[in-house]
Image (cartoon, rainbow, N blue to C red; front, side, top):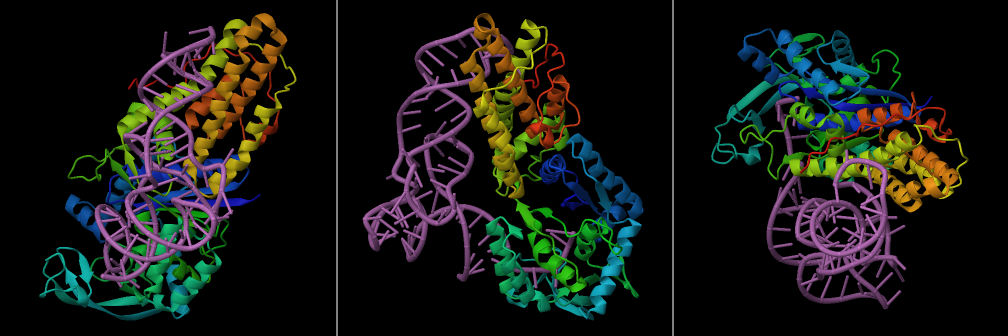
Length: 493
RNA sequence: GGCGGAAUAGCUCAGUUGGUCAGAGCAGCGGAAUCAUAAUCCGUUUGUCGGGGGUUCAAAUCCCUCUUCCGCUACCA
């Protein structure tokens, strides 16, 4: 069985779950569900990143033990998953013992390969900005932000990132699909070409992290720790079942860590590189940047409470080109709900099932279907959808499914089963048979994103345990359609 | 500053390698139908494809330039 390993980033627990986390997770979930339906052996990984100075400090401020602190905040992220109906296979936490083992192991491998050395990190540091500045950035003894800086020297382990500049460029040239979208790849390449410096990969100023093997005074750099989770979950350092990853889904802000540092670490460790890293964009809210101070941060839990997981999932995947930034307008979500979900799709199901339930006691005959054209359209759609998923054109995926929905509504209007009922009952049966088949197919196509309502539709047709293979099977007509309930409640905007 | 990207109908945006590419959805308007959550279907208006210049038989699509906006330009994650 072909394997497919997809990941979200592990979410930094110092944040509360917001719409951005939900977005990445929903996208990954949609792809993972599609691949499962398509017969792949899938592992969908998500989790939490729990080490680092900020987390340590937050625990201190809260006056609790760091481990107790992260247990609690990690749970916030885990709790989000069922809310947005994300069906992960593994929820990885970087404070798990197996992860410490894996991370310390990879450290030793990098060290054994001569890529780690002890030196000292020197630079101008601003406590206020929590950042180092290059000498060239210092103006009149101050940071570009105007903050005071001080000269700091700290003992640190370094990773020979500079050694991997050419190998990385080579690799990305030979694997043009390894970073997407194209624009993001260019950013990465220009970053690498501008020259890679060795990377400081340990800290001594705080202790909440994984100790460096053989020198417990040092804590590992959080990104080395965090990135390693992708192989921990796959079984590292034991034999790995799901490596390399098929797809790392990331936000555009953490591209460099995934496309420069991570591949370099893997090269050094002698491990294969992930097949593809895809960076998506960010949401703004009603035209403005989301921020705590503006108070316009969108809470996914509240959103789902009001509109349901299906609508939220659909909206986020449909509204913007995956990879671009997008604006979150609540009015647009309502329009999508009303015009796409309720009017086009929900009403298609409603008008057909209600007709059968009302006029035919819910029974249809198994009449051979001669309307090849529209059925072919439906069967052939799977190929288009595979391409959409593999290129992460998730918005196209939904557009393509809706084209079939529109075609099905056109078919209803053109065939007029309500007229056929009086004039050609046999033909009416055939048309209804075609329509139920189309509805089944569409529900299957939508099931990676409209997880709940698709299931409801399939239940109305008395179909269980579908995969994409079901599409090729004839519809079972030996059943009774009961009077349907509307699939979606309109917002009425 | 350097590198890169974007500017297309009222709104949100599609437009691979230059030749039905001037499009879709939503909104608007007109009509049909009445199975259905007044849900559907058909038809239809608006565009100097950011400005200017160039290459070409042919450019939204390539080149130059200008304007505006955005991203990246390493050690918080």
